[in-house]
Length: 112
Image 1: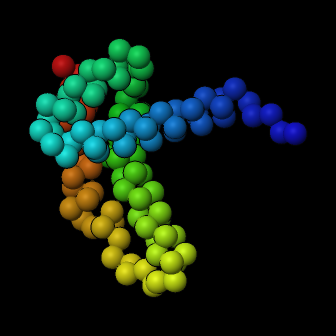
Image 2: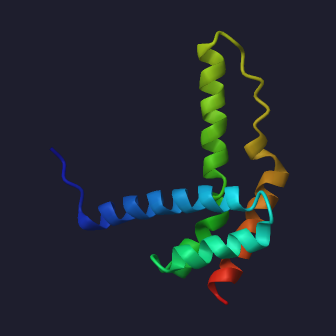
């Protein structure tokens, strides 16, 4: 049995936290974006203090949920006997621009 070092375990936990935060931020930004993103970051920062390195990773992490949903859709289509369309919306430029905007709002809310 391989036991992860404390550093590896901490990195895994931070990845999971970031992924959950990314999914929450992306969902919050769908309606009344700036205000909801600020509210999420206010509540999150009561429990977790993000360091600059983590804040720098936010734009990339915001696309994790969209990627996961696209993979799920791909699998469901294949399992149903269909052929996936391969028009990955999460890879479109506007998805990355949206992630950058939401990340900027989140970072601004934390640094207020």
